Amino acid sequence: MEDNQTPAPPAVFDVREITFRYRQVTALDHLSLAVSPGKRIALLGANGSGKSTLLRVLDGLAFPEKGEVVFFGEPLGEARLQNFEFACKFRRRVGLVFQNPDVQLFCPTVMDEVAFGPLQLQWPRERVQESVDKMLEVMKISHIKDRSPHHLSTGEKKRVALASVLVVDPEVLLLDEPTAALDPSSASQMIDFLVGLRGEGKTVVTATHDLDIVEDIADECFVFQAGQVAAQGTPNEILSRQSLLEQTHLLHAHRHIHGNNVTHSHPHLHSHKH
Image 1 (cartoon, rainbow, N blue to C red):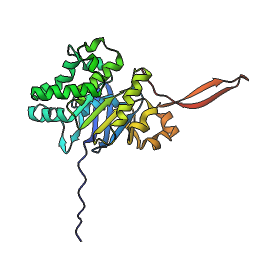
Image 2: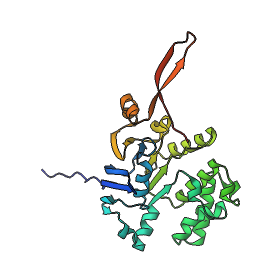
Image 3: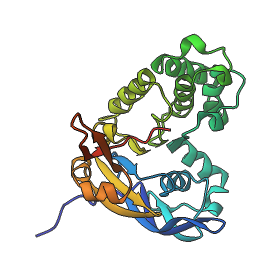
Image 4: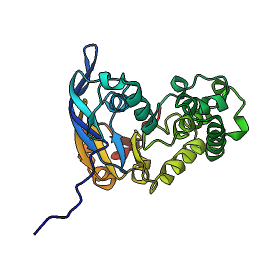
């Protein structure tokens, strides 16, 4: 009897035993993981555990000294990205939003910022204008389109940075600490946006310290420690493992002095906002 099952699609990213160092500091240590199409992935871990470095590698901004990254079945290396045609297609399909929006914003106005990507991809002028106007409306930043990005609040800057990536409608979205340094209102707007990505078919990889939002924004988690994957599972599975969260510095004991002067300790999840 013939097996008529459709073969599984290739992974968006297949990370194979990669090692990356900043001078003498090892950021990624023989790291392996795979990201399936359409999945929402959360990368969890303390500062310095390798999450941001991995996002840069997945975006082709940094390259491992050992191992390889495969993108939809094709090796993603420095030489490959020097090919103009491949680089254009890759940049069209994959977008990274940095933790610090000031790193990402450089144009004189918000509108110029959002239009930059489409113009680089040589879209027709009419398509650029239509796409930019729509994205400004979606991200609720139309009213600041003529302002300089550097004179905006942190929340506004993050929305502009996100809009500048989303305007080209990438298949893969890489987000580095999207709620970090935001006031509660701006953080809530960002979380609502991330939750809204469910069902859109995009692959979303989010590095975050904010454990409170993981169940809303992710289908699967990878917990990082010292540049390696310490654990993998659903948000519920990971958040229920108290010893793992303590070991990876995602959960700490808080001590409280009660009315009878008795000190009591209990575990407490930290969002690590900074």
